Length: 522
Image (cartoon, rainbow, N blue to C red; front, side, top):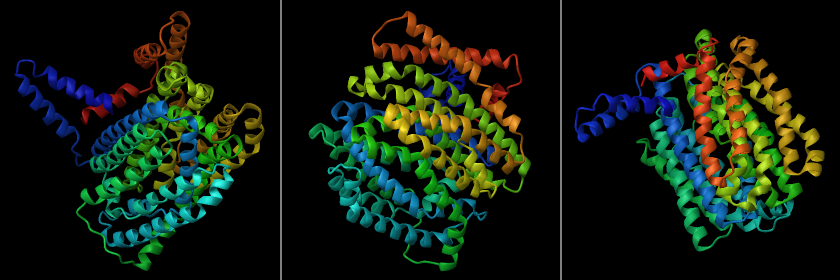
């Protein structure tokens, strides 16, 4: 969405060349306000929501990258691994206990869900306090499991986080339900900024693992505070048993999916920490986080926008089907060059930005970039399953993923370390899970398997050309790693754009028309 925004601003400036600088600035601000104000139609709301979420994820990712870049220089991989192990436990308990309440409210066809909010607040608050207490009590046993005694005090401090977050204002569900993502932007970015500044400030004073722990607590505290600042609704502790049962009944498949999703997505992290230690986990998690950044952010944008959008038209299968195909087309157009580009620039980025102490993560990061390509493609599948009432597909897919990864992961890790774990993840998704997910998606929308395969394949030749040009540059030009990274990024963007236009002129891809249509709403 950043490209249409830039085009719109560019056209505004071009039309004001005869005016003063003040006129230009006023025109720009007016245009920005128009762009970021949701329209009345669903597609206008979705486009505006996508812009806000893109801005959100760019800003959030910028804070995360800054955090990684600065703290990777101040802290060692083991510090990241210790907090990573603690976060695995916290995330696991949150997933296991998640009731799917927000999903139930978004799916609810009623525009006003205020009668449910007090019940949601009581359930979420009770859950948060219970999680915090469980983490505090279980900390010694968790430290023993990971063979890392430093996890115990860290986890007991971080246990405050879930308790605080459980008390946030439940009316934040309207940010997503009504596609009001400008408020979601403030809510999320405030937490990311708090994490960055608190963690960095502490690390400069005391470069230890505690910097990451206090950053986590600060993020949850600030987000909870902003949830009340951004909404006029004030919850009161009361519970409606009938409404609670209604939400929990809808969310039961979401809860099961969250549990299985956690095991399939974080099970490899738990395994690495248990078998290979905290330092190995530090390398593996940072490689995963950086290599999958585009796919993760795209998946977040797509799921946040597409699920409420699909839910609003759930009774119109043709509209859902058409929107799904278009979402896949745009997703792959963005993800394909990012994934291949990340694999290409990994070594100069790690050497020039993070430092040579992080070189063991290069090969895993390159492998996991290919996993990011597949994740970006599958990002919107879960949204269409939920919106069409097929939440059980989420559970079935995740269960199969867990079984397939569990079989080869131990011998692969013993033989090849974290690179072996990455190879297993990529192979399972490439050869089994992607075709299975496509089959379930076709079932949900009564669509075409061939059409889904084409939308996946269209941008790959252009991304491949970009990759070959990058490899040629690496072979013939020898410069400092940081300069090489910048050069590869710039050349990659230009090469991909030219290749896309060349392909579009030869086949009926339709991506240029999609971009033009999105731009027309801006």
